[in-house]
Length: 387
Image 1 (cartoon, helix red, strand yellow):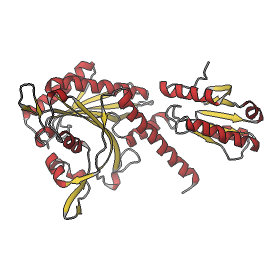
Image 2 (cartoon, helix red, strand yellow; image 1 turned 60 degrees about the vertical axis):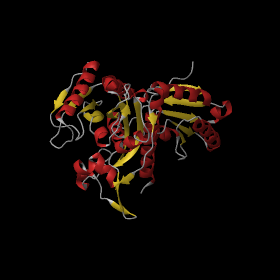
Image 3 (cartoon, one colour; image 1 turned 120 degrees about the horizontal axis):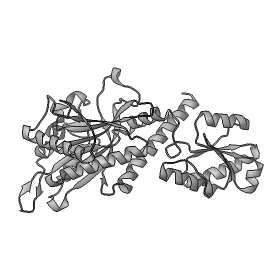
Image 4 (cartoon, helix red, strand yellow; image 1 turned 30 degrees about the vertical axis):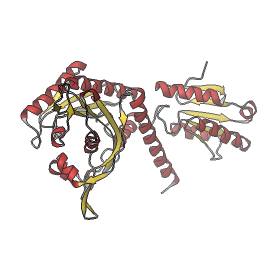
């Protein structure tokens, strides 16, 4: 593999990490009522039998494996593990709602001919969450999720959606009454938001109806991302209960939701939407230092360390090319900020910064560059030097 190709992969890994960190931070900053969980990647096959996945989803699951005379199954979804955590102790109506999120890797069998880059893979990381609530809390909880979807997608510049309400498929579990209640709850949450929607008859998950949200990118293409699903069936299958105010045992309501769908797929959507020209806050390389002379290299390395110590994604161009070529390469590689470093900058302890598609910002100290980048990241905006 060429060094160029390795560099491209490194940037992809970095971008995926940035995206993951953004989602995890969002749980605390935007919706601090979520608790992050980490669950196993496989379980005894009986878990998947109880959940119904083995019966209704087996075509998309990998083969089972034998471990010490017991049969195990690698997970296609995270939800049964969250159910087990719920059942670890008795719950009261006062404990609800519970909101649990996990950036968990799941594994689904896809035929080799259907695999497609980042968009269709056999192992991917879902920004998954499950909410367990009282029947009286259900409508508010789903409306709250839709508001969170709107806020998160808006951070990336996606404000135009196509919304689909998917109803009961041919293969499903649960009574007609359960499905009617779940579908009505989703309808009410859409009405609360005032969003237009279409109906996909028979397009729901086997355990409940769902809302799918497709985003429209910069050139008008639609991409499936967010989903919200109401589930009355897993609580029944796992005999999930809580103690109500009158002392009786009742079933909680379960809501499945994903904001981005999967980290990998959404990363692919972002690459397409931005055409690889990532904004400063999301760029895997935010600033590149360009040493004009060999004598400036040590100062560049020192400045890079100061930047990276503050959480800035910085690199030094050590190609030895002429300045014009280094600038051209940085522009072609769509680096948001380039910092020219010559004898004058070394002497004054500054960086001569220029922004892609913006122009020169002049000589700035490293702390000023850090402050400008951090402000841009916090606001999902462009770089502006401190006044």
